[in-house]
Amino acid sequence: MRSKLLIMIISAMILLSSCVALVSPNASAVPASSEPIVIESNADLVAQASSNAWPGNGTVSNPYIIANMSFTGFSDMAMWIDRVDLHLVIQDCSFTDCDISVEIDMSRNVTFARNTIYGGYEGMVIFGAAGGIIVSNNTIDEAHYGMYLCETDNIVVCNNTISNAEDYNILLEGSDGNTIIGNDIINSDWCGICLAYSNDNIISDNTVTDASVGIFLAYLSYRNTITGNTVLDCDPDEGGVVIVDTVDDNTVSDNTVTFADGESKDDSDLIIMVAAVLIIAMFAMVLVASRKKD
Image 1 (cartoon, rainbow, N blue to C red):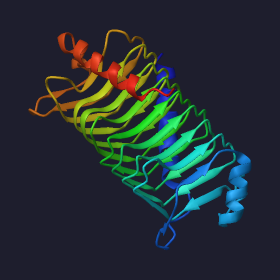
Image 2: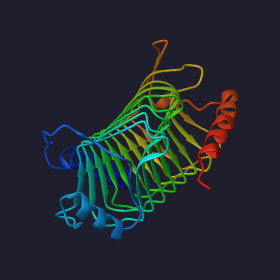
Image 3: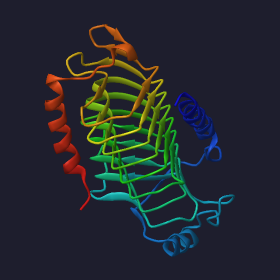
């Protein structure tokens, strides 16, 4: 068991180091104003790349690149990528006060890096993806929901700053085998990182500051590894790392929790709520149901 955990942690650290230099250096151009981008297939991506002079050819060594664009005030999705598995990089773009800034559905091989999302309802949604997606070095601020992974497996979310969410900063629902590593999660009215019906994920080396609940495992979530995280200024009445009684076989190690009242905890004092957990669980169930796709 320990050797398996060590391998998982080493693999996660390798992924973290690889997230630092995923794309080429920032271009100096001022972001151009843009209408929403909707890409619904590989053929659609090829056609739009040609008409918009996006560089690349969709291979791993020469991905298509969408860069230096700005999107402001759209009432629907500012960018929607659907059923694409050609290699695509989205970088150095800004999204401001859009209902959904970015949604990636049923796709692979997409890198979303060094972008800025501010305001709006949902910062980033990833639905039905399975591998090859990396979300790194982005800033998401003041969205109602920060990042939502639904039925999404084997992707990497690393080195992002996600702050000031009204509900959750990161939610995984029905999502397995993902790596959430090295993110800075700041100020959530409810939960920093939440897992529901999600298995075999690595949640490692994240810093969660000023959330009611730092990291929350709920509802049939098994075999997750929660290690090396720092939870600061969480609500002492709700908990830093909370595990409800419907989850099992998770590995929780080397995490540090400091409550808003200054009290510190480590894994020997893992917070397992008893009386309050039913209230938290009921709230989370309503929240997850409200986010579920039709």
